Length: 179
Image (cartoon, rainbow, N blue to C red; front, top):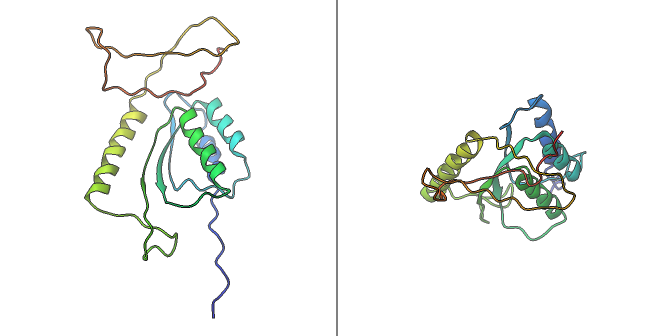
């Protein structure tokens, strides 16, 4: 005899991001939220679009360590897509490790291999994350106002004018309008 099915896990990821913004209070350039998540979202009161807008208006970057699992497409995929778009649009960075199906993963249906390769990946990604969060610079641009969308190209060069290949640049996709 089986008991009632357990309630599905509930995750309010979008609400958690909004709460993180509240906890930061008055934000400063370089502020960031770091989430460790499987990206699941099925319990927030705030929709993804509202969360993304609040994140972009604040200037806070969203960094994510994503624990993923191989699952078939589901209705929650739209929330995952919205969440991933939020990360990229904010100028944040995403990394993670995939899960694998296995017999010992009864709770979530997957588990993670804890081997040297996984530890090395997590170590490398964590170092990259620290560089991304801590290596923050502010770049101010003056451009004539225009209603059309234009592309911006940024190259970091060394003292001899050669483009540096060891520098990553992330920024919000939409730059805030001048006040």
